[in-house]
Length: 152
Image (cartoon, rainbow, N blue to C red; front, side, top):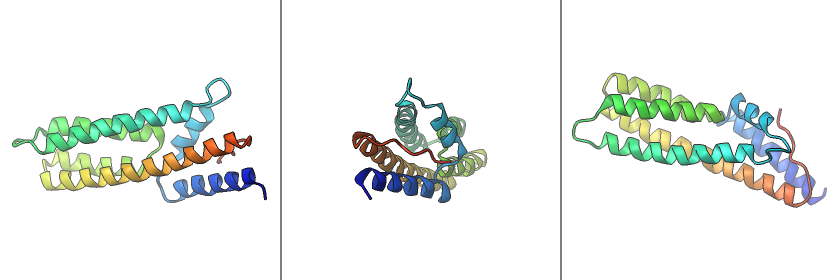
């Protein structure tokens, strides 16, 4: 088996595990379908924006939850934004934490919010590392002259 074939197999296995383990949902597949020769970096660009937004939102959330009197409406607005951006790239586990997080905001439950922030951070870092690994494999395949397999 040549190097390209091996990389393609690794890519498929890695991508498949992301869906199987619930890190990604069909929304990510939809993003991939929007990518073509005219816009070969579309997915990477969209996901990179998601990473930048997420970093900002997580910092904003941490700051908001450390205030003496927590503005739960503001916290909820950040979580809503985070849920929206994670949904838009198909980061399913991040989105699921945000759903629970918003319930704690409604209840003005600080402990619940703090726990959810930690979970959101963890899930975000996991999906970021896994997507970066996927993009890395993609680059290796292209540099080796291969084509990136479509995951269906």
